[in-house]
Length: 262
Ligand code: LHQ
Image 1 (tube, protein in one colour):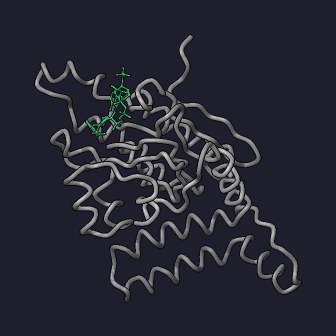
Image 2 (cartoon, protein in one colour):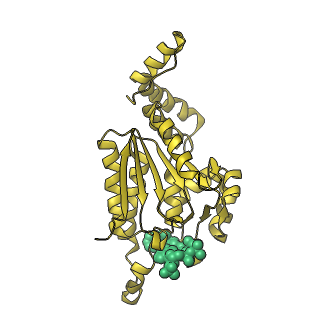
Image 3 (cartoon, protein in one colour):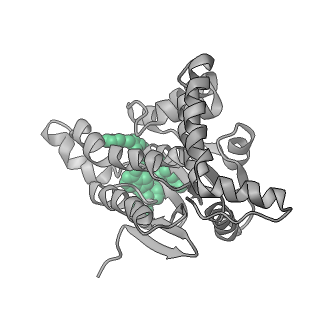
């Protein structure tokens, strides 16, 4: 029996989700995207505390599987709208809305919508051999799977335009220097480092992380004045968590806090 295109393993509060079509650098098919979507929800439903997303083999993901849609070009072309709306967008929405922090461990090339998926995660840690290729315009397409939103927010508008229109891969060292990733790990230490980061986040105030994501999303598309209104509401939600109250009590008692994600 062939392996599933998405692997799932939950341990110590961390749901490790692995894109698993290594022979094509984990390029996406609709079935794989649907399973990825289901798996993100599964992690939240099971009460895990963080998701660690990575790729099997030498790539993170090469984006849409172009071979799987090649025959459709002879029949009027792929149905881009339904591919995006029915298969890609549920994954991207789930990544941005799931009530868990999501860590991408970028273990190799991330291209096209594969890069978009990495950029939709809350934080990125990469191996030194990782590469980020926007790739879209190389095949005459525009950025999709949310990249026109995420990329300029991560690396600023001018560089995003350059990266999108040139499409040349950015190596891991450059990705670190422009803020596309937060950490680069040498050699084969990525899995261990990413696991340690995921465990650290899973043991943290996960509700506050998710609320921080929401606040950041609001902040980049609103005025300062409106942001102050929004932050009061979101802070009230964070301030009502057990984690907040317990952490203040721990601080006053000069003890380390224990977070439970609620
Ligand atoms: C692949 C792929 C791939 C199939 C490598 N598909 N097999 C698009 C359309 C429709 C609707 C929705 O949205 C989208 C969004 C998109 O994602 S558009 C962008 C699609 N992706 C690309 O254009 C990237 C294509 N791949 C590449 O440019 C290179 O493979 C990269 C730069 C990712 C990696 O290069 P290398 O490290 O040199 O690896 P490789 O090219 O030798 O690839 C290894 C194998 O994976 C190879 O198969 P083979 O049988 O020869 O070993 C490739 O054919 C296969 N593969 N990407 N997207």
